[in-house]
Length: 417
Image 1: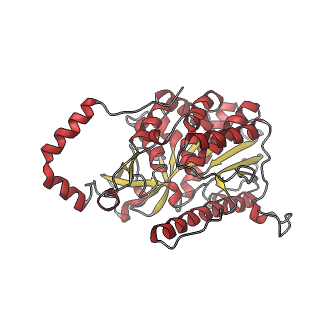
Image 2: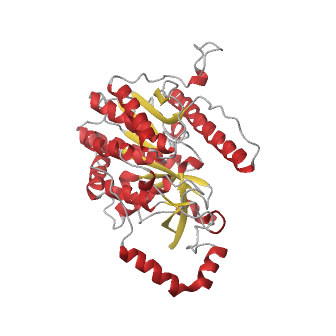
């Protein structure tokens, strides 16, 4: 199934034209000066009481609600045992976790690796799948498995910039909320995350599996983990639309893309939460570190093999460049460097948590055998080449790294990491 080609209709253009006359230049000027209107954000004192669509376990604050997530994991275990027909105290099969990071168009790496791994016939059914940014786009496909691989391939090999964004005028940097409109990306998400997808996610959730997506609340300045399976299985009107919005929010890079305004409830009142790319806080996550303090993974009830697979949709080696002495160049380079090391610190944090909790750690990232190539964002040729490279590795047995390169003491000091 190919991605949809989206274009404006004559009716759309006519409506926009009439709206311009209806509102007049004064209203448009006011909008540019004072910004787009929004419903009020959740007050700080009500932050811990936020729900969405009335679903109590639909979302969690990643920084303070590890205990609530631990309860959700326990309930998932009970559903899993019921699906497996396990009696109390019965031996549990190995649990496989998958964390997929952000990385923009480098998500073609993770998509290719997962598709190749699936084609090899050795990919496990994951107990837990998490995603951030481009990883949030990949996560539902990875969660649902083989029958969704062709869709995943299409998303990362048959699209171009026009399927992701519509560039806006430079005036939006001053008067608007973003440099681009993500209506094309929302159309792409809507095409693939449909009613059947929601039903399939709900079915797997009811079997004890979890699909979690990370965003960031700019109002609260906090990370949010969305329990996509619980939302899908809730039966609430608007559940499918919410899932689509969460995926788009997770991929909405602040400044470049507009934020996603998500309707929430707290204290009996309705509010709007400004949600953006989860990479603002973390490029990837497995589970909040404090869950390991809330739960004894080695207890008789929970004892099982656990294997974590972390896909970092980026390189880990720094990219040298001669930086011009200009404001935008210096700022852009500094931001890129910050993002690079946030992502590296994430895989170190996950490694430390996995080791503490007795979880087998496996890491994949774009290695130096794939050349640095200067390219336009979402360039189809670049993305297909990266996808094909990762696919081949996944198809023939990917050499998962057991330790982040920085901690691999077996390397000589002079060997590149």
